[in-house]
Amino acid sequence: MIRRHTLGGTTYTFDGLVELLAKATPTRSGDQLAGCAAESDAERVAAAWALADEPLATFLEEVVVPYETDEVTRLIIDSHDAAAFAPVAHLTVGGLRDWLLETSAGAGAAATLAAVSPGLTPEMVAAVSKLMRNQDLIAVAAATEVTAGFRTTIGAPGRIATRLQPNHPTDDPAGIAAATLDGLLMGCGDAVIGINPASDSPQATARLLHLLDDVRQRFDIPMQSCVLSHVTTTVDLIEQGVPVDLVFQSIAGTEGANASFGVTVPMLLEANEAGRSLGRGTVGDNVMYLETGQGSALSAGAHLGVGGRPVDQQTLETRSYGLARALDPLLINTVVGFIGPEYLYDGKQIVRAGLEDHFCGKLLGLPMGVDVCYTNHAEADSDDMDTLLTLLGVAGAAFVIAVPGADDVMLGYQSLSFHDALYVRQVLGLRPAPEFEQWLARMGMVDDRGRVAPAELAGSPLLALTGPA
Image 1 (tube, one colour):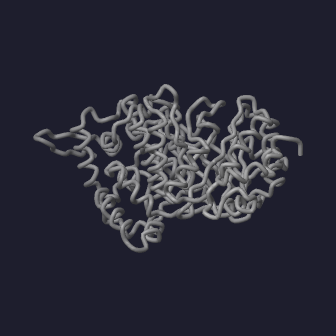
Image 2 (tube, one colour; image 1 turned 90 degrees about the horizontal axis):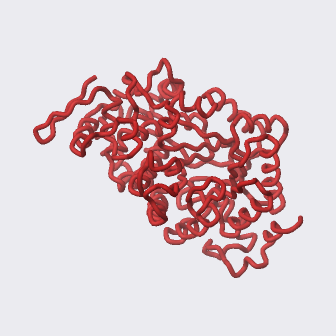
Image 3 (cartoon, helix red, strand yellow; image 1 turned 180 degrees about the vertical axis):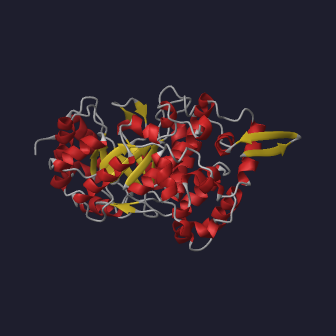
């Protein structure tokens, strides 16, 4: 259906919901590469005005990616909760923005937002995010509460967890142990100790899983580990009795993009059940760890929607959260600047995308985290990452990723350091996951205010990680 809006004497025409969403999106290089971005600021504003008048019910009738050919669309539509949608069913996209901001400022905001969340589709949430300023995204996300649990509780108010990422270019156990020690001594690792393996071989993955599980048991750490191999590798290792805590997989917002990762919706649902069957959690049974990122569908050539039109990357990213919602994960994070400047050109675009992704995921009921990162050829630097980290801390992000020295020596990109996690906790008064914080206190590694206590670290039993058991 054609949409039109007149602005400054010029009438702008948008051929269908796919084009309207794309043209209303804040500027980013990936949409320009795909050929779906607005051609001027005026066209973008006109599209935003037209989108604001779009009834939310339209998104249940006019899909962005065809229902008949895309299993993610079918999952989104078939699992829609009409009862949860009812309180906002009469609203337009602009009306939803107003409702979200009003609700977030009132009493009982968290419960009200949680109740309506199952009634919102990813496309509705993506649409409303396009009308919001950065402060709007932060305000609503901060009022939204989503928790999950395995051995630690993720997403509780007033806390921010960290993925300790001890990657090594050759999966050397000594190098991984040294990076793990570095992070633990600075209070990181409460979300997960997660390794991107240099090899996806089952044998290498099993060795790393045994290494991390040995560390956990040796020091009685309330933590979960994960080696980020393909989901099929992990499921096979589960069947072999290898100590698997979390089941990892990268996911995307279209069936075709997920096929490029070698996964389907049924495969992911089965993996979730396989992980839960082990019963290794202590405070919860959320076992999935999922990663996403704007631009992945375009990279796979799987970004086309209804009528063969390119769908903007942020809408497709938010659709991946619709898939994630069905998997009830412990952790999900957008790797916001990892793909490169082809998709998010500079620090401004990365910051905006990070806030959008966090807002959309959290509003859809996910314990949303962000890998605050950039590639070395992007027009971004550590100052941009400081800004995004601080904003995410204010917005109530469930977790962030931290690597030694902010430089991942295996993947070759810039992320956050363990010191950055200490910074955001200190300046915003945030604390680690409660179970992990209690362990830090038992180990004498934090003071009575929950701050890492350097003077006590010289005698920490954790230093045994650098030597024989």
